[in-house]
Length: 491
Ligand code: ADP
Image 1: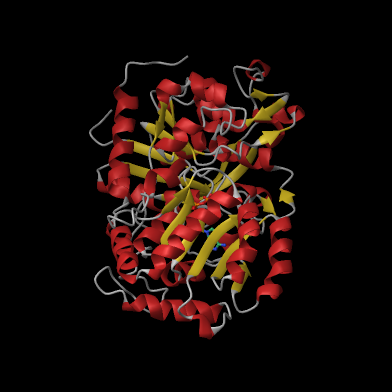
Image 2: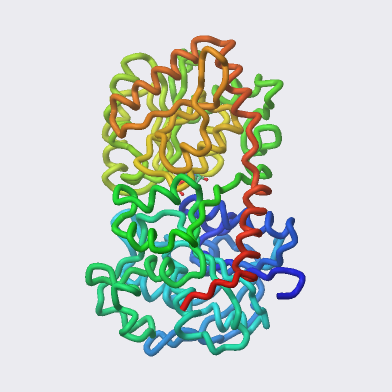
């Protein structure tokens, strides 16, 4: 290894180009933070239809590079955005990536996701060759780039440019595994011997995520709590055994926040900025938020509870449904912003009219509105079944929007329970996944809200927390260094 550590980050989404969830925030911020600690980073991502349509100026770095196997042996172009803080590259192959969404529509996943992301993983070698880039570390994320460690071990091991490269595979959400029918396996260009219990086979199907876990030099998840939980049957989604077998190489590194984007003192997307010492802007934002959702202006003093979320089973909407009537009956305001599964779209659209003026629902992906919710709500709800890290609770802390969360994964790691007697803590937690436990935590928050001195203290505690990327970038750097210099070799 030379003086500077060279890292290729391979990911399927990144802010500001394309986003469905927290992964995009991480890829939009971690490379910058790594650069600041002296790492040389390049990022590789597909060139999606939405990036193309956003008309980000791009230039073509290389045309007609080849990747893939057999029928998937196809050409792609390598593009780069005209401006940016660090080298960023797009894989352009329109038949795979020029779609309205990244992975599928509310009705289901795209039928050819294996082809799309196997192809993407396969571009790593030609991209490195084209750029004459010899990475020390290839850092891959989630099932969409899980094949990279597999290819590195089983297809590219003799390529001098990639010799010595180590892989780190980060799991942002274990529930999304990239599961496909066995008859698609040949498209991966791997020997059938890898379709085994020690390879990518999973109950008769192809499991890309499992390939990443088995063949990466190290595996990480996005909080310590989650890295432990996923080794148990309750959270392991059938992969707990495989994860336990990698326990020595399994790490938990909590995500950070990009405070350049999420800071109430400088946020350009909210009507009034505010700070820990001057909270007046928060009331202005609350008013604007209530207007945006058409809530009854007579309720300005009522507590306003916000949610911004993928509408998926993971996020605990069954608990929200169970507690909503009681909250509405008690004059609490609730605003929800989300997109996701059709059943939740239908449910929210069905119930919203019954609570007009007190419940606001917007089915959309709307970043400015997400900022307004963080800035204007009094509390933030995250009753997740599981939460690998969770970012919204971290944004909520910074905006003094007190989180009420289930004590799981990254939520338990980042929210400190309030002690009303001592005036300590940053949020309200509950453990059992039940409506009763959830409403008890909300009630504790509502009681504290009525005590203005205590509430202001909790807001100030929350806003004082620092979850910036610097600390996490240092931890990743240490892990990279350990991988590069480590004596342990895996076969
Ligand atoms: P996950 O990755 O499981 O979706 P996280 O809390 O880690 O959850 O990250 C979600 C990210 O996506 C946050 O930045 C959040 O603000 C954003 N987000 C989720 N849904 C929406 C939406 N409907 N509109 C705008 N932003 C959203």
